[in-house]
Image (tube, rainbow, N blue to C red; front, side, top):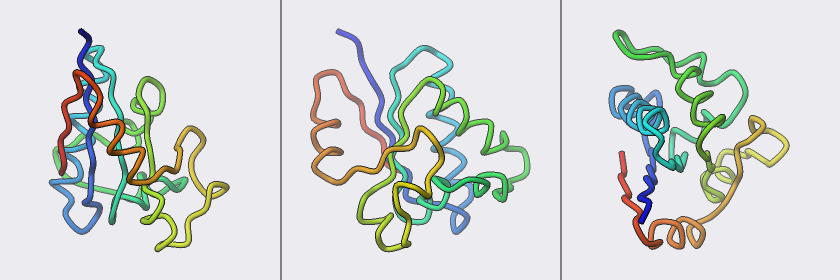
Length: 120
């Protein structure tokens, strides 16, 4: 059985270390050949918008745009529906490759066989 990793990141610039840790773990798993799904929720929702990851800075951390690019290339990135609506973010606003989906899709995803879920 192949295992996959689903990571929900709730932190953004408000908690930069927790945010960077989620993106770093997700991108590292992708580089290792793991099937990865990253969910942007709460303050991390803003990173679904073009240019927002470039505004994020954390000393001694990989650049967030590079990590996000790796996830978009070889993983899946999802923006929470409710989080998007609360921030007035629509499907036409997000980076190409980011999907918008809700809690039912998240639950279905994490309940799959061989899925490991992490929340940051």
